[in-house]
Length: 478
Image (cartoon, rainbow, N blue to C red; front, side, top):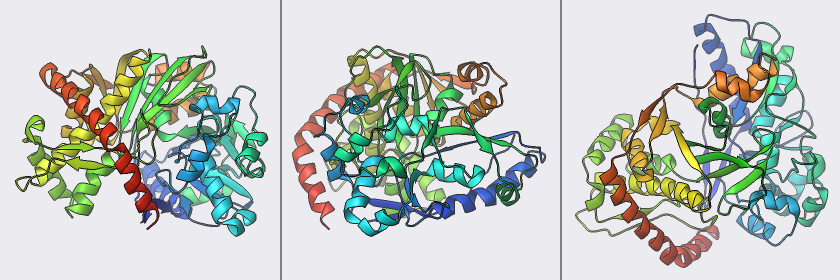
């Protein structure tokens, strides 16, 4: 009916830190929502569902006042803590392949407890961006089954925290600092408070329905809930999401499989690339200092570059690798430079690297027996035709390209409708509210050439990994 957006800043601090002010999220919501409601005809709102980036850690007092900047998901300061989780043997760690990622809440909490003990002692609540906004809306500290299972080492089979695991990690008090009520997607959190209704310009007395991770909520909007279907969201990072039967089979190189995280009875797999569109934006806007018009001109010029003849090969690990290598200490690289290379050629090489990284995830999952019979592509990648085409050709499968602006919004509508009781289940709601999409097919000749390049990309990763680890360690000590 209507959409809107408001920007807020991110602080990138050396060597590998990224922070935001949680109050900026609420201010952006208060600035945006009244205008959106007005353009939608000033309706009475029945339900609100929130989705947000995961693993963005907020430390608060009990009243919801942030005590420090939020540590963003891409922040890699907790690499040592994440590595330490590999040394602990606990059955719940099997959900995440035996260890935690540097991005997740638990390693960041471990880092805070070790390096900011005074702040940690003053912290009443450790939560994520989703929980912070839901608290501002409904006045309750509630966690999402999705976030808790995927990022908090929550046991979704017994529906309980694991204090013994947190104790082994050196943060036994974390079990008490996290939101104590964990609700499934589509469950009702409570009614929007009068204060929040006034701040947001909302009519009526809507309920707040539990959401989850932004990309993951898009699965409901894409209609890729069943095994065999994958949603690939291309944006600042790339996320590959699919579900598999709860048969106990181990799958490596991914986060998960997480039981019951998205829907009861299935296990969700989360693959992806930590840096994707962020690399292209960094290159064009930060390094080349181009404005929006210059960025578009660069994309057009790069589209005329033959990706097979640049003489360059890039690795897309600017902030580490999530899948299939699970290596937070990998870093980006561009090799093959000569003095004849220009901006469009360099940019095209980085587009190729991000596309190869996406294909590498898909092919590795298929190698392990994960069926991917239907692929839906969505996200900010839609705004970059060159990146979109490269990704489709590199993967080499017919792809349903979502024509909706934001599958997460469709997924939130699915959750809200389920919370209102308008469907028998959230799966039924997803089947009825799927976003429109159009089928795109790869160019078979280009796909074969990407496959050849992927072998070199994999070889270069293996060759450079020890050196990239050394450079990463130097950077962390800056």
